[in-house]
Length: 329
Image 1 (cartoon, rainbow, N blue to C red):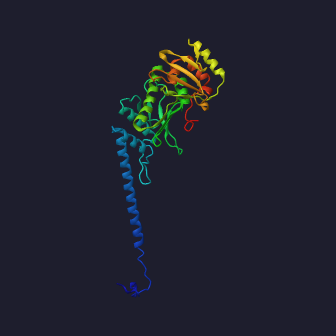
Image 2: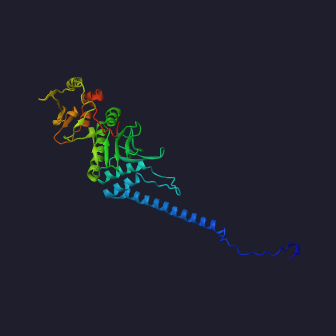
């Protein structure tokens, strides 16, 4: 080697300080980050795989309890993580729709058709006979209340509220009246509207039968024990006077019971009665419908008898059947 490039010999003496090799710290840090990343990726993949297991159960199981558990978990499931995202997904609200179809299918009562909209990227329900007028989706309730509202897409009418967590189903009297007895009244055949009512009743009955849900059918309730509470429990006598006139126009005679309660007798031994107090002064005026088979609800009466529908709609501010104010304003 050329002498001008030779370096003098350097002598290193021991140092009393313990100095760790500086090269090892970044090596350990990077290794730790790689392990953490790999673990998080594994957890994300496991999360995705668990999602597919639940989805398999939702769409294939014949067990009611398994079906409910899968729907409940999927309705709040977070598929994406910070380490892994899935660009093609069904929304949480779609799982409510799938659950309704599967529940009815378990009882051989699936009447509504589950469709997919490429335009809106969502699933929706079509009901035969009324699909020309509208279709139905679930809208999630994003407050602490949770659950979802079964909503007619075009009008935005929320027909019922469903909560898996609280085992609760609440029907919305106002929306049912507006959609089925007003908006659809002149567009849709009565048989189709009656079929849709039966479909809604099936949902409630099977949720109660299979899972013990607490149900409020409001004006759809066909039980003779149903007491329909009205919006204005102390409406004026003019409302009763109008019923006398409308009944006469419909070829019926409004009668009064011994207590003075209006009674209207219809076909097939169906009786509509307005009661004041009904044993509970806080209720004021209430309405009841009687039939021998416990199959006729106030909704059925309004759908069949035009003069009663006219009277009810004209006096809706007083006569509207009340819904649960916790879920519907």
